[in-house]
Image (cartoon, rainbow, N blue to C red; front, side, top):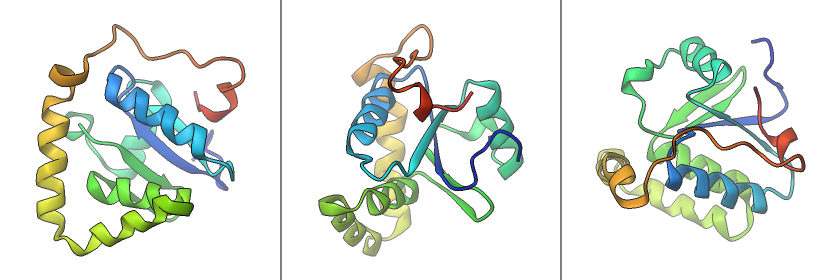
Length: 138
């Protein structure tokens, strides 16, 4: 797919969600190996990627972890893949894969459903600083 670096892992996120924004910033600070690139669901490229991998934007209230040319993951599975790729102590989150997916995803869905009420919502997607701009796809 054009515009997508094949050697990076893509994290698609809700660009107006404060929890999502905080999570993206948290990951950026810990991405010492420069593994990830980020794109919001609301952007044109985010919409193209979702369509390309076959996820309807109406069904998305989750982070999506996309490995171009390989696979994509969402909900708790995406969170586990991100943690594994961050390495270090975050890789230990993989132990949660032994909890059945429907239990993990039920908890994930509960948080996702309430994220705007608990953490708030922005009027528009964040605009990255010049230093962080290379981490975001547009």
